[in-house]
Length: 185
Image 1: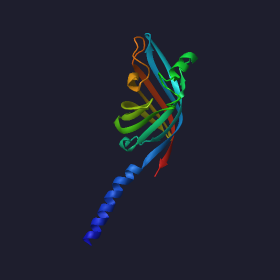
Image 2: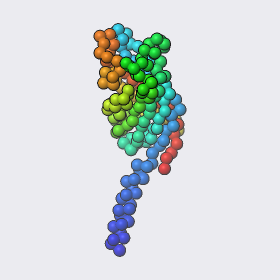
Image 3: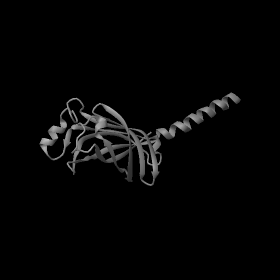
Image 4: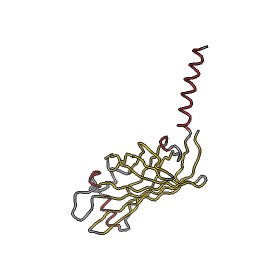
């Protein structure tokens, strides 16, 4: 009888710690805007990246159990100036022929308060993976959600060009992702 009770206790403990982790909301991306900006010759220049795809498992009340990942296509890089875009797509910068995607995958997520969160992510860009911290917000209305965050990287850490007196090393990246919810069980 005592053994049966212990077995049931262990089973209950296992289920009670596993079920909450499985109770996660899958968010299907419906739209995404990925922008970047950098100072070039003292002027802020920017552009966009498209072709977003991702897997967004996120519960705003339990972000630590979530997983956020996404990627964009490097060939979609658009600064509004074709000559510049073609230059940035070459091997010295994004090398789109060899590295067709930029990927981001969460390592840890935490709630800071209200709709504000923070995540540690692995950013894979041009064959280099580095950890980045990204503060972000998540807002939800019914089954519609919006993720939004901004962070800065050093372009030289990802082999994007060479040191340059006119081009800043810091690149600011902004993410905005709209999504629809579907419960996972």
